Length: 531
Image 1 (tube, rainbow, N blue to C red):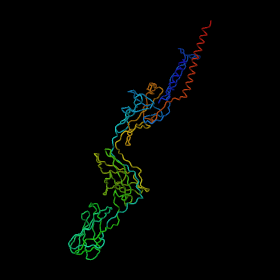
Image 2 (cartoon, one colour; image 1 turned 45 degrees about the vertical axis):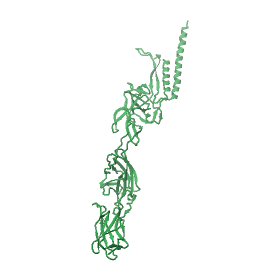
Image 3 (tube, one colour; image 1 turned 180 degrees about the vertical axis):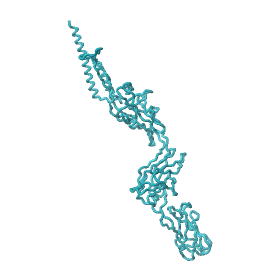
Image 4 (cartoon, rainbow, N blue to C red; image 1 turned 135 degrees about the horizontal axis):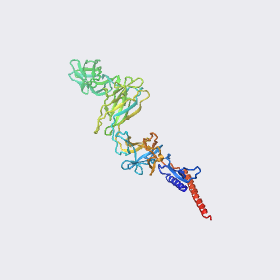
């Protein structure tokens, strides 16, 4: 019995040494028990044993060393638990995490056993259903941008954009002569400015004889007359003055701009020539109007890329300008250079801040809510029209400069699968060329109340048994389960030095037991030789 036990011990040690480099291998230990002959009356206290037997070959599930690799599908378990594998319908368990992908997209090991986990629904939420993990290789569909997060600080110390010129007077330069022979005259074109600073460069004055020394004067803007005025022109140099009102664009909500015509230096006589040069004077009394091409008409701007329903990219730009009203800013939105009209008459959205720099209202609506929806924009190319929700919950007006603290949007273009990542909780994430990720599944682990009771199957895998108990399945990191470490493998837990020492001990035991047999044989021979 001693030789048999020592031989078994040597076999176990030899198996441990042979698998010292096997990924996920767990060493075993030979456990012995003595043997006594039993009778119905029991065993006497001075009974002599009958030898030794192998009570158990106990598996040791201590943690092996972690070896790092460059393969994201190489997995090591840090802590307790086993990978749950589907072997043609039979569930087996292993600590060896060297996985790859087969031609059907399943994550498998070298024995074609499929790694199992929790499945996901159509929107990427983890469900409780378990199955073999299969990676999808289809492209990720594009998502149109619907929301833009604008976490900005508008500089409270910023100055109102340079005051705009507003034409308030038209003056004749030098001596001008009007012919009294019932002829109308038009001046050369000149430029005037409305109270938004917008320039009109095709303005003219039309002089029409009104009888006697009177003339009707009309300001023509783009060929369209404004309110006429009557002024008397004497035969000598005088200072007659006429006042016209000019509506910048004829809209009902636009103010009229009064313009005074200074006729100093203007005379009329029979057989005269034409009018003299005209000079438009400006007093700079109003704020400069906004122009996307004039960087001096706004304070700061920022931009980002947004996407339509087909995944095409578009440049969304946002311009901010401080007004003469304390704590008030105008915001202008453009996509691909096309203005998206805001709620105000000039196409802007109005932002008002408190004396503490917090956002008070947007277009007069108290904040929160701190968001506005833009008008629809047609991106073309067959894509659906898009409307953006601008989130200004992170908008402030503090001193210290213009800062972009958050600038993001929720859309993306189409993406192709570029890699797979697995985090420490077992989440299998597909990585795409557009920078997006998609949850494919979650690796599950299993643990047992008595891992040493597992039945070894070979290929560093085990099956549950009555002794091991039922598996306790869950996500990595939950309950008593360890975490998953991607890009690494768990090596064997065999300590070669320890095994070599054990081998020497087992060899001595074998030699000693063989010596017992030799001694017993000598004694037997001596008895036979007694005469």
